[in-house]
Every structure is written in structure tokens, then in C-alpha cells.
Image 1: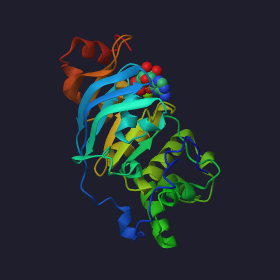
Image 2: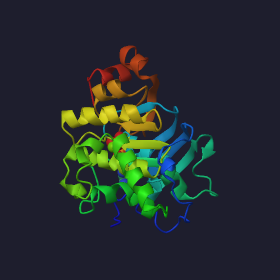
Image 3: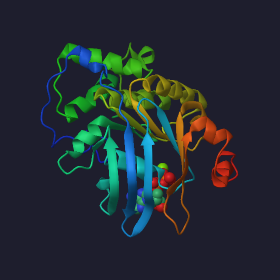
Image 4: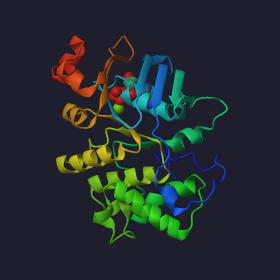
Length: 288
Ligand SMILES: Nc1ncnc2c1ncn2[C@@H]1O[C@H](COP(=O)(O)OP(=O)(O)O)[C@@H](O)[C@H]1O
Ligand SMILES: [Mg+2]
């Protein structure tokens, strides 16, 4: 069931059992969380791919990371929930603060960071043979969370509602996740992430494998979710960044220099009055 590509791949062994669920726990009632990267430098072997990148991603907002291929957006995103260190050659300097607490503090468990900071990938990756219901609650088992049958049922419904999928699947929760359309599978993956109650949701080009209609459904879902979960999205699609994000960061790298943030700030301002010529060229489609 667990595979190397699973977002919970190594969550099984380390976590102690946590208190069991009551139905009300399904709702994320904790305060909205800010996530802040400070002076992030990243390497793969000798190759430095990010250089002293700092960015505050405000609580309860949607931050878009934009920039050409290869400039380090995915690497930056993986650093935000400690997935970068899964790559054997990877190294890192800097800090990531979730509400002021460093997720890389040696006292803290890697799984704590992964549990509070969820990830949705480019290609929808539900467990294909597992039922829709089992997909949603898969993360509970892997994080050692116990829940009664009725609490699980309630959680499944809540997460599917929040992911904008409930009405399409409520009559067939026992059907295989792999039988859904691409856009539905991606919303199932969002529901699965939500079930472990993350405070931040990272999304790496979540719509790039989807048709325009599914893309719009996911965008609407993101806007709803941002009321309770801080969202960071990597997107190649400038219109998407403009439609969904409140703040935006433009990453750029060249052959000889690692990725940096050229400009960041309010999305509307960046799209209408970019401060840097390179930002202007990129958001207006002159390169990338
Ligand atoms: N697992 C890896 N091993 C070695 N180099 C990598 C790995 N992943 C990414 N890179 C390199 O890091 C740089 C940034 O990649 P990435 O973060 O994927 O950029 P983006 O998401 O902006 O396209 C690229 O030069 C890429 O080749
Ligand atoms: Mg990428």
C-alpha cells in the first residue's frame, strides 16, 4: 500500500499513537498558520539550486510560486515540509518557521512537519485499488491515529465536502479511487491530505494534468479551503496565479546562478505594476 511515491511513505514507523478522533475533530479549528522560509539555500550534490531564499507565506492566504522550469520552485516547496531531505544527495541551509517554530529543529520529528504541512502533487496519486472512502482515511492509519467507525464516516464526508467532491461520489464511496476522472482523483488527493488536518497545504502544479473544467473546480476548491488552511501553490499558468493567489513570488535561475526570488508581493500589484523588468517580461509571457 505504501510506496516510495506516497506522501506518507515514511510516516508509519515514527509516530506514536495520538488521541482518538471525536467527530468534531474533523474540522480544523486551530488558528490559521503562517509559514516563513528564511535564508534557504539548497543543493543536490555540488549543484546549488536555491540561494538564500526568504519568503513569508501569510496565514489563510494563497501564495503562488511562479517562474520558468528548473528555477527551484518544487525544491523550495519540498523544503517547506521536509521532503527535500528524502533525496540522498540533497543538502539545505536556512530555516522554515511554522507559526514561528522551526520545523527543522532537531528536537522535532520529521513526521510532525509532514502532518501539519500536507502536499498535493502534479499527477493525482490516489491509491488506485483502494476505495474512495479508504483513500480519504489512508493517512489516519499511516499516522497512527485511531478513530471510531462513525468518526471515520463523518471525517470522510467532511473531507470530501471540503475538497468539493462529495456530491459526485457520495453514492459510491466503496468504488475504487482509480476509477475516478483525473480531476476527481486530484480532489480525492486533496481530501486525503485534509483528513490529517494540515495547517498548510502545498500544491505542486496540481492542475497541470487536468482539463480546463477540472482546473476551475480545483481553483474554486482552493479558494474555499484557504479560509481554513494556508495554501502555497506552484503554477506554470499565469492566469491561474492571477485568479487564485493573494500573494505571489517570482523565482528565477540561470545556467550559472541558483534560483532566487526576483520579486514577491501582492499578486494584483505584481501582475499590473511589476517592479523588475524580468518579472514584467515573465508575467507578460515574453519568456519561460
Ligand atoms: N532529485 C534531484 N536530483 C538532482 N537535481 C535535482 C533533483 N530535483 C531537482 N533537481 C535540479 O534542481 C533544479 C531545480 O529543480 P526544480 O526544483 O524541480 O525546479 P522547478 O520546479 O522550478 O522546475 C534543477 O536544476 C533540477 O535539475
Ligand atoms: Mg517543479
